[in-house]
Length: 454
Image 1 (tube, rainbow, N blue to C red):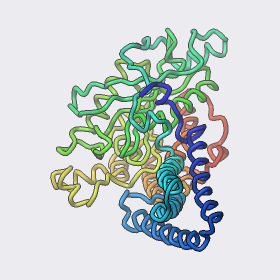
Image 2: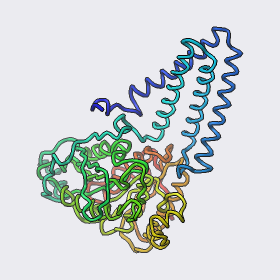
Image 3: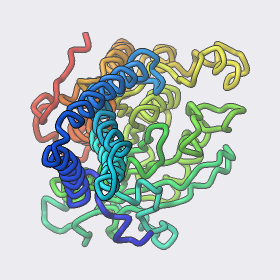
Image 4: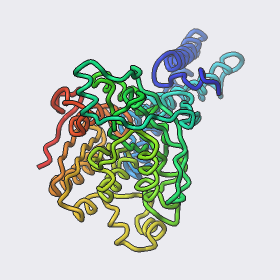
């Protein structure tokens, strides 16, 4: 796939506008030709059948989403209604396809395809999962880091800021750069896909400061690229760096699963290998050896979305000597993969104590008191994640952590929650890490509601 084609946006711009417009025009033309040829009784029957199909689609999607919970979380009413409308539109086009002849039959066939594509694209826009054609086909958008080696740290963040106040900062670009890199698995032998890394402007100087680190994990199914495409991490970090003299955390998005179809639970297991060892030893070791970062745990954060959010509260709680901060969004209360008894048998050798040791609230309590920080978020349309968030936040608060819990308005179990919540999360942690003061109280950020932990 060419570079231009890979960068075509799916959630905004000409492609969705064109697709939605063509779909609407095709359906309108089917209706108009039905009326002009005196087929209005047939058209009414077709519309009635389509409404019935839409109602069945609504019921089926709701059952899959909220009753049987086949995806582990509710799809949300925006998605349920979108899919139901897709059933209705496709049902209408199929009714005409069966009875029509000639060019009208061809138009109906085209309408079926357009309706299917439009429904899928609308669902993607709601979730924000695939933002470009390249992300849809897992095309790597970033150059290999092997062609670039950052300079060794030459000063602290405090010294960088002092030089900024005097106006004599080392030369650095206005924006950061993103790369792809294969992180060695010397300790774990975990079969990981390439990671994505973001270097802020200060890291690209010939005399970079020792910067904080964010290790961020995508959800499952997913890939490391999702943080950078659907999560818009480079743009978020560039915006922050523009207000902080080129300073922002170095971001690394490693692979915690090995495949879009695997769920490692971020544990060491016989199922998919030693994911926990990879994320707590191999990845931090490579970061310290190859990137201009500070090694102190209080300047390291681990975060993630959905399954990645669950992993971040597991790993952060279990490895406070590596990760002094946690940044989960829409995470779960515990590692989850199918039936719990089967999961414990497969992943933990039937040892329930090993499983419970991976439950974030218990891992936090087992290591109390703690000086870690937790910034946690859930979407307003994701009630289950809100409950999970509050349980873990209260456990963290009782353990002595500094805790901030927020709900993002108008979003659900999707990347919109991540992008909304991590802006104040970045500033809240950035202030604690010495990058600069937060620009406004957390509750004053757009679409953010601050929760009372106590």
